[in-house]
Length: 89
Image (cartoon, rainbow, N blue to C red; front, side):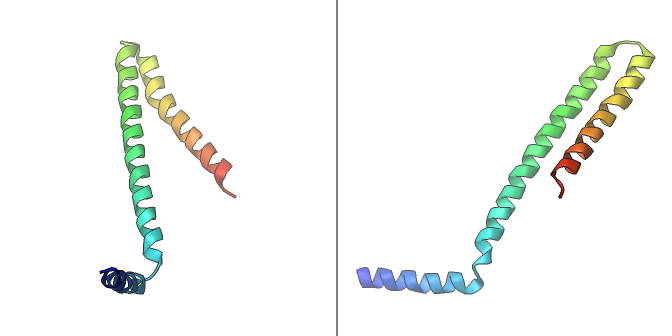
């Protein structure tokens, strides 16, 4: 029985590694990218909801509404570009 199991596992090993060893890394990379994408989607949804809440809570002041509609995205873009600049070589 052991010999049959060992033979079956050797056959499976030959078939799996015949494809190449890169598929382990590619599968891991795909799962990691899916998790990062889901996390980013969740975070962006929260930020958009907070932006809309801030816009509603300001009231009738047109100047404050304009500033909230322009300064908030500019601050986020500035942070994003600064972060990208700090991690690039």
